[in-house]
Image 1 (cartoon, rainbow, N blue to C red):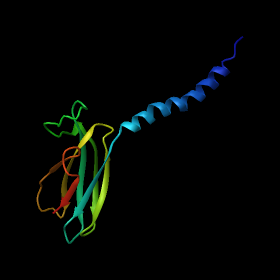
Image 2: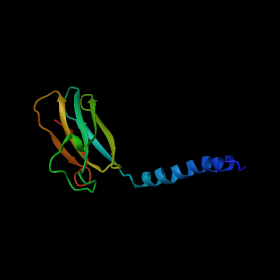
Image 3: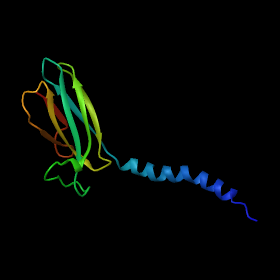
Length: 125
């Protein structure tokens, strides 16, 4: 009768190596985008920012930014006149940020920032 223990030991040693190869390789392909965000108000501001990917995950800008293309959505609070650097990654093909000022809410305008082509800066005004 053969023992399956040596095969199990070999598999348990191989899993970490395989995981490193797969995820280590993917991590090398991910690019980080730093975006400088400045609150120009003399009061605190709250900004909602969503990240979107292209429909074909190929870098082609979406014609419309719909929920199905949204990767993540977060709300950030900034002190009066605060400047902070926020970071996003393109690991899921997310090259666009859509943002708008929530507080103080002077208008309902939504702005788009192309992480590849635009200057990576958001000015809260």
